[in-house]
Length: 475
Image (cartoon, rainbow, N blue to C red; front, top):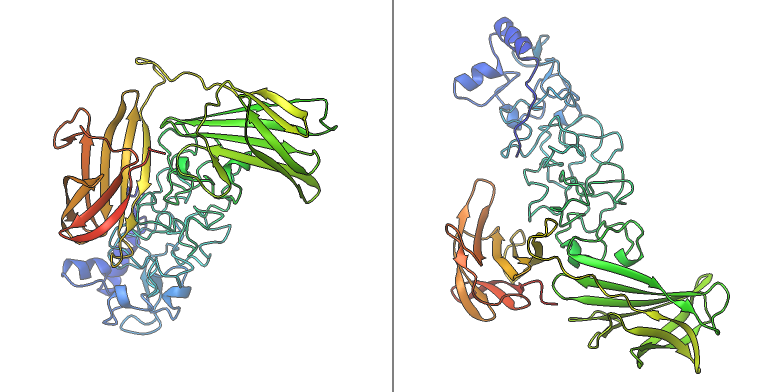
């Protein structure tokens, strides 16, 4: 967590109150006891009405300041005069825990933890967390879409943490949320230039997961989680490891007025290639797709509302529904769409530009991340991922990370061969461990002298399987 840059303004007021009343939260802390602002014997951290003003913390816009109606200071003002939503207020419930500290799990002291599904107003400012006017959800003085705000919902999980799957704390998982960072601007790139509120622009080189849903943009069909798949989304921007090219095909004698067809070629740094043939507004029916003089598939034109459309996809590696295997050369090949001996459209599939050469200032390694699957019985909060960096010479870094499992030693196998051990260490907020291999190792890194891309990877402890999956990059 980043340190807060605001100092609490009303400290002088609180000291004056302490002198007049003979008690203050500062005195309580100095004596080694839990803060008890209203002197009722109930520590602030569990007191439902910290200042005894008759307004429950859950409804009080200044939890730690008001005229006491009961207790030893009845009729007197206790606490501060700073509203919960004031940037100068950094300990809303006066429990001795800063609002943005790891230990603060109930910011407004209303007995509902910040991560609870029942907590709808984290900072107790009378604005619900999802209200358009709520711009600082956790009341830590940093606006939700500010570059320095790395824990929007104040649940002590960094917004980029593997375990954080609800960045704005609205009880809608990031993969289903149409406003992931809760800034009331939606996820569409034209409206929100930092969809997941992690302080990195959507187009930044180091932003690999635009919507913070745990799926790498390269493997995510809907990078900004706006409900429109990337290939149909005008707002989609290419990842830094891909080249997308598009060519409009030339109408033939049979083509009807207003009809069109195009070819899209997507080339990944890992060698994966996707070829899409699209048609629009020519008669419904089946058309042959001829590539390099050979019929390779069928373009099925179908009525869709008020227009006729069709799409056929070819892809290397693993296939999804309706995709065809791409096992033949396509770059620079002639392509045509035909039916009944007539050519409707024709053209040439584009050729991707050559890869960067060594010494090119624009060249940098590409990072690919794959989430691993939990085995049965592994805690739901546990997560693991396999990551590679790919450069001109191939894979330069291979790293496996694991979180949320009991501290101890775990074995990592790639392609069924043991390659090393991860030591998982218990930290104040979580357990975590990593194992890193490099082509040119430094420090404690191990030598990467074996293949990894596309191979199965497992994490085990003894004979117990904890995670399994596939190293990315081998599609």
